Length: 344
Image (cartoon, rainbow, N blue to C red; front, side, top):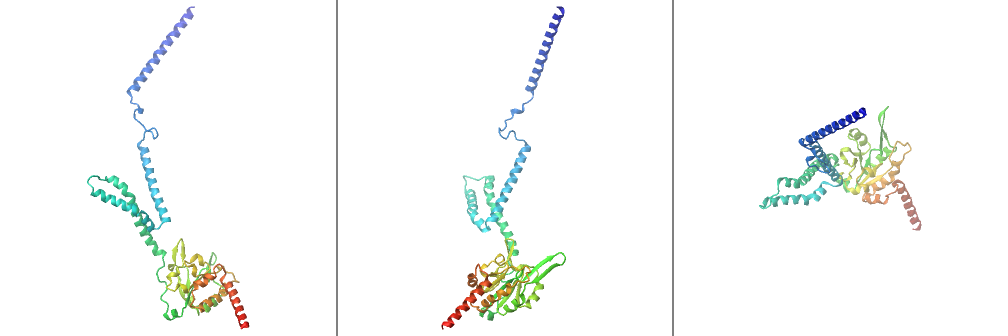
């Protein structure tokens, strides 16, 4: 019995000690929380939270780079799609309205536009002006390399030959009359198309012959072709660089456009005047090739009948092989002539 009473006394005393300890710890926590300032007392944005200096700097940095990327992207798109004059025309009203606003605000004594507000309004207009000035200066520099070296690539034709109506035959060099290839064992090698010598010798009686090439240095070609009746050789500096290619601009030859024929294995790909083109098959060293000799009758006929517009003649052969079609027409014409003689 005595042991049971002692056990109850010990349990009660332990329970009271535990309650005192809990009360003291809760009161100390309350006092600490009351003396320490709460971090939640500062108002914060429900979405962004409480912004810190680090977050703010990152936000401004990303915003700046985003604005720069947007401006550069817009400039690149405008450069690709529109010319400088088109951009100038499309933005002229916007830029002039900014200038008028500035003049009105400067003369008004009632309302003044604050410097920061005006800077925000005028910044796009100034950016367009800077873009146009920079683009025109860059295009001016590039034009010196893209355009032919002279507006007149050839000197004036002799008046006597001009009165006779002498035609100009322009021959492309690459894969048309010459094929060049490079091998590791032998280096560069040049091959002459079959029938070239006879082709040049025969047509030099009817045409002023010009060779056009993409090569930079053509001094080694002048003497060789001069012996074959070629009058002039035009190099890469005499081409028009456009869309990554070197084009032959026949309008710069200082010759009558109605008297120019351009023969090339890449005629429609390299010439800006397709109406003057005589397309033929590119030559890749085929030993049995007869393209130049097959084309001789047609070119002799055109060169002999000088007072015709070669562009209208070439238009009648559009979409056909000129050499074979000319032979067919010649045979048909000869047949009709024989029939007329028999009937007469």
